[in-house]
Length: 404
Length: 135
Image (cartoon, chains in turn red, blue):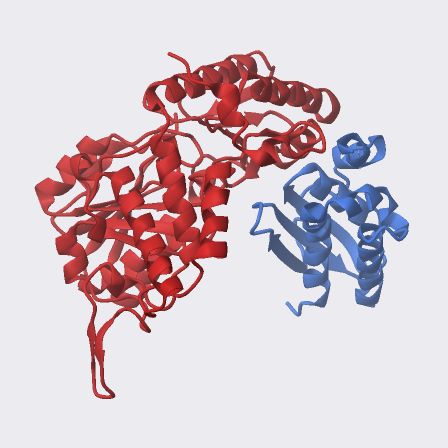
């Protein structure tokens, strides 16, 4: 299988903006944006900019249509009812929304189960809920190859567990979660499941109802969309039962000085003027992603991961932190170089036009578990090619030669 | 550009690891983290009767720039009081502003890399914490 890689790459203006070649392998932190998304945002800002769900004039109608059209695109991408899509400021904001609103339905002594490899955004909100509401927080351990150890589920998942909140794909190791196993185990004790999809959503459409989970969150800027926008999906009955997180305009039924009633979901969770332009961009990004042949894209991305794993395998003192093979993983690869700090690797790679992330990746408990200062991480997108991997390997060889 | 940053002298400073190792009976201890990258330094001091640094030891878990900065600091800190430490920090900040830098002159190429300034300053922040603390 193949796809028009050069045609796809040409859709991303920044990749050819110079100066010099750009080997962008920091997609796990923030992916680049195709022209179709830029065009959609510009079209909204220049032909339909107004507030949504408020005015009756022509532009207000157009803004509302654009915003709700974006919601429909996201729903199609996730294969969900449109009213189950809540726009939030990002993935972090979406998890905080669940921690406050679903968290408000929990009682002291109830438990939330996370894992040791979670991003801070899927740890800290639950710690804050613990301190606020008296719940207990448990963490699944991680295997030596950087996967959540589901063998610990029988020990840590109890009838007191009300929510299991895990990364669909690790932002450090690239390991993919065995979702059916988690969903079945959670269902058996009556617990809900939240997946942090920040690293999964950029790799193709999802069928969330079929996944068997209850909440799903992802970020726009990691999925070829703008900054400042993210998505919470939740089953309708859960959203209906949850109180609002933020109060203000739009999220109300009726306000008197004595009391306020809430709007139905999703508006109940979208207080104030929403980020309309970013939502429009995210809708366009979902439409763009849905237009790709993901079977071909995945083959392409995984061939690049194999090239990277093979190349690093020939570097003395290089070690992969994560799954060694291509099974149940996504194109996020962390590695270590003996005697060279990850930040110095990343800085050296920048000199070769290679953009990667280095450090703790907002996963300090995982770093502590493995006694690591950090890792160097290459995270891929459909527009990457062999020249990006080869440039990284050339830079790694230089770092070993000059800094070790 | 990267080779300018990791020039021979700065690499040598990092590899020298001057002052590496904790003191067995410190009078002052400070720990500093860089929350952005996770770098950490733990730094111990003993002081003489006049409040000047008599001995310094440190443990750095950090990048080459942080290691090199800790080496420079360890080489020139003994005999300094709080004002002397402040002067040292001023030297480092001058280097990072591209304006000389005294003992920190080797760090001049870091001036162009703002995201790495904290790597250089972290040991100085720990030293400042330690010398001004009342323990």
